[in-house]
Length: 239
Image (tube, rainbow, N blue to C red; front, top):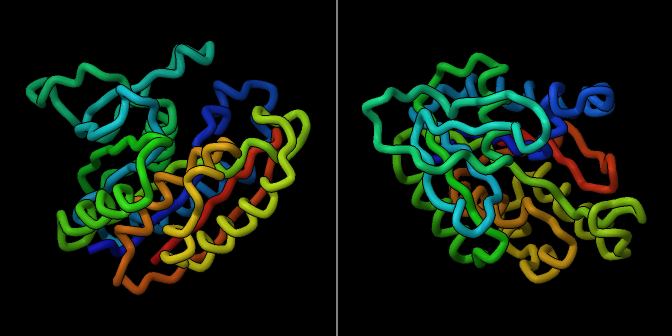
């Protein structure tokens, strides 16, 4: 059963070594993420799942101990998703960047409160499939927590990665409201096609969260909302 969840944005810029001179700009988001992860620990879960967007070929499950790197962003920094030894199942795939950011957040928090596994979901994953995956995660242990990585639209300004789209502000406002109030139905109702057009990478992971939270009766709090670089970033805590 899902007992807690944290929602965080997934840009590698959250990692100060990647952001370099721009690091102070995301300091408030970083602080909110730390607070949300701390609330996960307070829930005393038996298992923690990290869920985030992934490209085709990088989706699916990631075992504890899977590694990721920020070398593709010009930084020789590696991270590990929780504990895992050499005798674990082979880990031939590196973590997708959003899961690597999650691993960095957990390492920064000194996470040692429950075993960790990862799940990458693609933009093409339908809402009902996302919800089904979430239900499966929630049923895997008596006390399950989720760290859900993902961004809102990338079309909030003319300098945004997806340029300006006038629909982006409304999409992000509804996503922020749903994340901040733990509105499962509203998250499941987010339009996958529109999310794709707005380059909202968080849609699928948020819908995994919604499936996991069905019937759990959790309350939500929005800890951070902004759109630096024209991309919607949200931090929320559910408990």
